[in-house]
Amino acid sequence: MDIQAFVDRRARLLRTMGRGIAVVPTAPERVRNRDSHYPYRHDSYFYYLSGFAEPEACVVLVAGDAPRALLFCREKDAEREVWDGFRHGPEAAREAFRFDEAFPIGSLDEKLADLLAGQPALHYSMGHDAGWDDRVVAALNRVRANVRGGTHAPAEIRDVRVELDEMRLVKDAHEIADMRRAAGISAAAHRRAMRATAPGRFEYEVEAELMHEFRRSGAQAPAYSPIVAGGANACVLHYVGNSQSLRDGDLLLIDAGCEVDSYAADITRTFPVSGKFSPAQRDVYQLVLAAQDAAIAQIRPGQPWDAPHEAAVRVLAQGMLDLRLLTGNLDGVIESGAYRRFYMHRTGHWLGMDVHDAGEYKVGDKWRPLAAGMTLTVEPGCYIRAADDVPQALWNIGIRIEDNALVTADGCEILTDAAPKSVSDIEALMALRD
Ligand code: GLY
Ligand code: MN
Ligand code: MN
Image 1: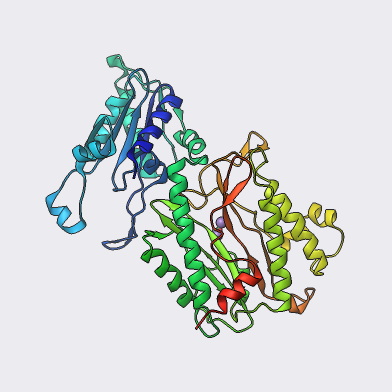
Image 2: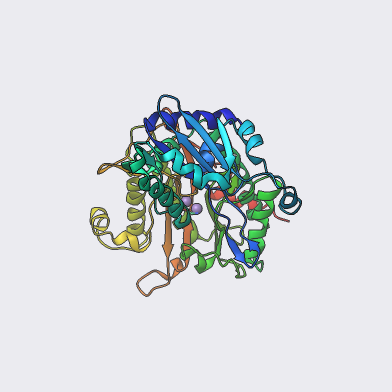
């Protein structure tokens, strides 16, 4: 980990803040039951500024003529370290993560009031964590209670995430390197899943192959709950039961990506359980692939965020007419939104530390123009449930194809293309199964 990148981000936020004090806490640990916790995941904003992954910590930035970056974290504790493992403690953390000062987290409440006194603005994101909101408001109120002593409390409260979202939207070289690793491991996991799929196996057995590849490659966790959806389950967009057996003749939709050093990949592939697409499956598959090609062709600097979605919708809607899923004409079914019966989500989202990453999609009332260094998913799909007015050969075909794109100077780079997606590449890989 290159600590300089984190130091640079703090310096940049301090410059953008201009004046005032920023408070950016990490995520709380969450109890699963009794004394068992969910696997810990730090807060992405906090980690983006610190590189520090321990719970119970907070970054405080003091802007102005003599800017300072402070870290509050757990103290060393020989007994707790026997049970839970290493803690840096403030002194070692200050040095390792290159903060100007570091203090025990237990002193935060008292110090925060001192730090807030006389500051014109507080940069803090209210409403995301009630516990932290209470602490910050209590500190503010302590300052307010002391105004007769000649100090003043911040008159302005700004959402620090607004500035951080803008920064997080354009990835630096370190972030792109991490995202490439997450994409590469996730693509390998999809290849492994294809080779492990066969009629009679269970969705969870294929899920286990994905997890095996993630962990053996050093990924810390899946970036989100994997979707391993055979047959009709693929038409349930957030299916995560992964409990059913796979049937010959069905498709299998897998939406899975791992998290590596805090950065996510998000890949979907859809392929036949048997290893061979039926003619009807192939028709819908080629349609979704053509929609994805059309969307990817729109990704370059200056294009509005919505351009890939619009391109995908045009291709999909025409295909739905050709397949007799819809009647009417292209402009009509787009205008009326009739295509949404079979394509009800959008074509992508920002990707980064969070699978649905930080950043506004509009600037004012206009779609944000893409810029080099932004990373996004491209994920058109088509989901056809059984219904009397739908040709029977198409029933229960649910297809999504999802890749991760990095906007470059003159177009985009697909980070996830090591996961096969042409009909011939998928069928060739699956032919190699034992
Ligand atoms: N896996 C979540 C998504 O594709 O957005
Ligand atoms: Mn996605
Ligand atoms: Mn996905």
